[in-house]
Length: 180
Image (tube, rainbow, N blue to C red; front, side, top):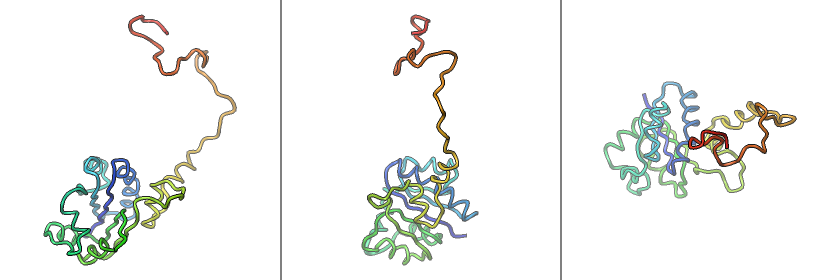
């Protein structure tokens, strides 16, 4: 069975914010194998959390072939791409070279979108990523469901007054064994 290839270069945070979208992809396309190409530091987490079966470091030299005018030449890359039905690339491709190379490698469907929303677009990055691949928002509905109503007045516990608590310091010191 062919799978889904997700390419998400960037920093650790960028890669981690992709996880909810990968989870939604898994739910949408039950049973399809997901391969993630991203920041090397999050790859073990992607596999441990079950959002990807395979994981590759985007900094690996073989991934530079995506940007090559001579196309994908490495046999291991060609083999991986031949097993891919859908490629999702969250990066800019102004000349269309990535899309061309994926198509020439036999990938039937590809979605290539910038890794971030347009400047001035107020949208959570997770929802942006989901929308680029046709999935519904993930974060906004969660926030709406879990929005708490403001309380009428703040309360404190066990008779302590807010004035009694020093911000930034401990309430108890082991040296003196008494409250500060």
